[in-house]
Image 1 (cartoon, rainbow, N blue to C red):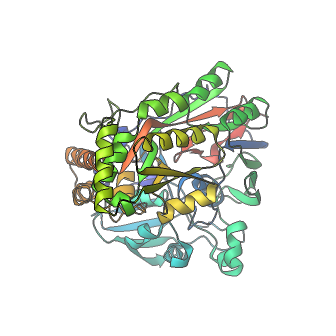
Image 2 (image 1 turned 90 degrees about the vertical axis):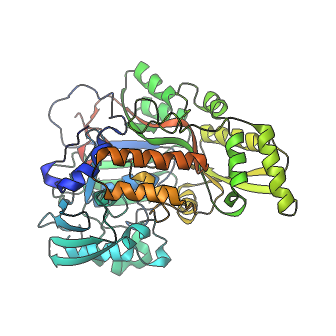
Image 3 (image 1 turned 180 degrees about the vertical axis):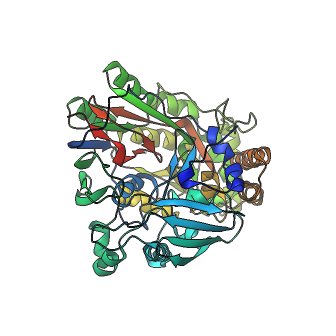
Length: 517
């Protein structure tokens, strides 16, 4: 296995080795149409998604559906290239280290925010410091707490990791990637969240919550002639059928979906389809609090979930998931498989727990996103499966984008609709390590922590690979995460739209997309 590190974002030799596994840990984007010639300027591109962004504030948007609009408004310090499995440059030219502990971040010189505030090292430091404000409930707080930083000059910061971490560049692609204008943040206060100012390829125009967000081309973006389009529109259309109809009617140019059914329909309709495989799959994450702090109840939930029933009813055209990673993946482990369905065994565990805890019925919550018929079907199936035993009840809480993100970040759930957030295997650390920046479930396991620590400190690719497998086996054994279909995102593209390159989990690199004029 080899990984290519682009010179513009060169890492140390040790870091390159540590990132080795990412070069083949998930499938590359597939299905890109034939080249359409040189990109053309002008026009509007509309992206249709099933739910709204939860935020466009750089300290609160770095999860899930908020990442796309934030990347468009702020750019990102670094990017993770899904196709080539490499960290590449963005608003920062490079992020380098000789030992995995002390790093140097170099920014592009001469950049400015759209309010003419300099985009410099002080601006980066200001934004990172802001993530530490507990009142903002930033999902990036844990990432910021894992480092210290100092400004060297206008374009340089020294970043020191609390511990050796050769995967540290990954944090500059999502949790600490986005930088807003310090001037605008200071002047606008709470209003900045609804009128943000960045230095990315697009500027904020308007946002009708639950309907659409409009962004306009930033003529002063550093990477001219990008972006190519004059306007970018994010439309919220919850139902997959309605999004597909909007795409065919020309009301949208790119549709985002996770069901193979619509990818097949798109191909049949003559649409381009770009697909990218992510780490893990689409399913549920379990809290480690309340009744779910008990290993027996967690095991019972695992025994009750029927992957095949959910897949057949909600995703009939998609492959199922019997193991944590599919066969052929470097992280595939034949022992990392979901527990067998066992209603009688689950009933015994529930009865034993209730006998020890006063006999009350166990009431769990399942948090999902509102408005999607497919996700509603999944929720109802999951509810019926868990309630197949006496004394266990599952309440469905369907929330809008902001509410869902708030629950995910705060850990205010028992079970929550979830995937691991991207293709980079360091997402395992982010979600399941006790100190992980995305671990809001309260999950803490010494075996998992030790294995994932090794993925940060080791330099031997075989050691890193086995450490990830060890962590995965323990996550499965403790029922921390369960999914019924592999995580694959499909982008359905209307004819005449080009340059669609997947980024993050559901979004595209907006500065690259263009319309045939």
